[in-house]
Amino acid sequence: MASTADEPEQPLDRGEQPPSVDPSITPSAPRRQESGLSAGQPRRKGGRRRSDNPHVQRRPTHRKNSTGPRRRELLQALGIFQRATPDQLWKLTRPANQHDKLTRDNLLDLEDHHLVRIELVREDQRQVWVLTKRGHGEAKKLLEPKGIRVSALREEKYDPDTGELLGTSYDDHAAAVTTTAAELHRAGIGHRLGFQTEIGHRLGNGYVQRADLVVRAPEAGVPVMLLEIDRRSEDAHDLVHKLRRYWQWGRLLAPDADKHTVDLARSRPDAIEHIDHEQRLWRRMYPPTGREGLVPVAFVFADTTDTKVANTVAVLEEAGRRYWAPRRYDTLYPKAVTARDYRQAVPVVVTTLEQLQEHGADAAVWRRLGRTGEQTLTAALDNPDGHALYRDQEARADAEDKQRRAAQREAERPVCTWCGRKFTDERWEEITVHRTAVRAGDKSVCGPCHADDVAREEAAAEAGRLEAAAPPEPEEDPESGRGRGWFRRRP
Image (cartoon, rainbow, N blue to C red; front, top):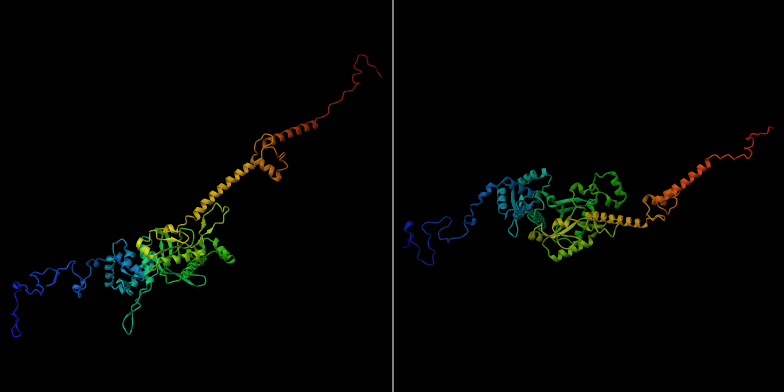
């Protein structure tokens, strides 16, 4: 019987409480509650959730074991790229892991130490993390001794009227730049410390062309490469102007170039093409590319269609041909040498961010301007028809030319009219050089026959000389016999 307000409620013995009989009422909880299951609640698979008790912050227990290397990696990545999602940081730090859960746990640990914070949550529910002032100082200590520029601090600024956090927009272009670097690192092309963003390249007129991303990956065969990330927010001809400025910057002389080189470049504008790259400005900023030509440039297209990409690449190929196309070598054998001179060209490769994410940056997803088909990055940057082929073709053509000249000379070699033997080189030179023509004698005979002629002539001359030098014999007196008898007349 139900108790009234006047009668005090009697406590029930929980050990003897019968279950409810009303079918519309959920049966009471069993006598012994299992851990994590409240009374009247059906069994749920998958374990407890954080929403079961929103007042208690459940943190992964292994987060407390966050190691120094993981902490350092995240601070370095955020110091370089300023803002990043856990997915991007995972690929920039520990791409060998299967997912970004460990990265998210380490970010929460850094957040507890007031080194990072969540700046905003994107529409896809991905959090964008940035460094706090304290974390920015820690990142400086890790990056500046290595000569790496640290990105600017993202300060927390609030609207004085509404109290909303200002400057929290994360534009798609910045996200695409970080994602491109993450995909390159994931494929083994570049280390996180080998990336730099917004690097300026000052031209002679003072204009600064900033590269969205610079990667240095010598271990992957890419010592340096400049990347421009385009979400088709720029006209195709604007990209041609960027390519022209990179080409112009690559031709600038270094401030410490020798005086002879500077004077030569000033007197002859085209002389820069014959000046070694070691005397140019770009070699003061970047290492040798390992290939002929200027610093390579890559255009990565994101969030666009294949048709737009194809149209843009067609404009780059046609309008930018002067900057990326190789030239013919100035050689004595133009028909035999088909190699191209890439020394003054900017190698340009193109791809899409979607291809990098789907197939990987180390796959055949790069296309070199002037070529058909897609290749791996190193294959696209190589010049199989460049200087190496030129040396081979030049040497082969020179050897063939020497053989042809030798055969032609043998065909023109004179033949002796006496003995029928061919002239030696010395005898041929005697009859062709003017200063020895006097002693060449008969030019129709070979050297040995000419020597015989000379010997005969010398012998005849010697005989004549001896004959001329001999004294004359005395003449006989007809009366010399008289007076030799017994009877001699006396006078």
